[in-house]
Image 1 (cartoon, rainbow, N blue to C red):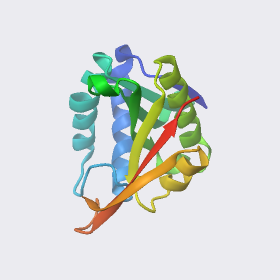
Image 2: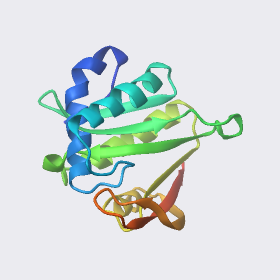
Image 3: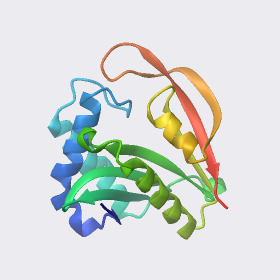
Length: 173
């Protein structure tokens, strides 16, 4: 498995695989801001209209995991924060294709994100995840601390149920 920072020159080539990962994750119920119905076209629009411009302007770092030159996982590090929060970054959209889970991909992507954060002199990483989601124990294993939970935070991707979110943080040494 290779883990790399996606270069803007490779956006067009990466778009179909990134869209497929996002679509697959939403289709199995991932709580990542989207609700059903969610099409492959919706996924492509998200990457090309929301993410790629921010990577291009440097406010977001996009990391990917590849196996046999195919992207199977991704995570974003958001750095476009107010001036009084320039010391921190946020984790967004940690996604691993369902066919490649339980292989250490998410852990390796998070470790790479932390390395990138240190290179940018960030001393604090924050994130939120659906309370009780499979990602929550992963973050705890990676030494993220729970700051708190908010009930009824976001609608589930596949129903009208409102799920709680858990806010977490990690102070970098």
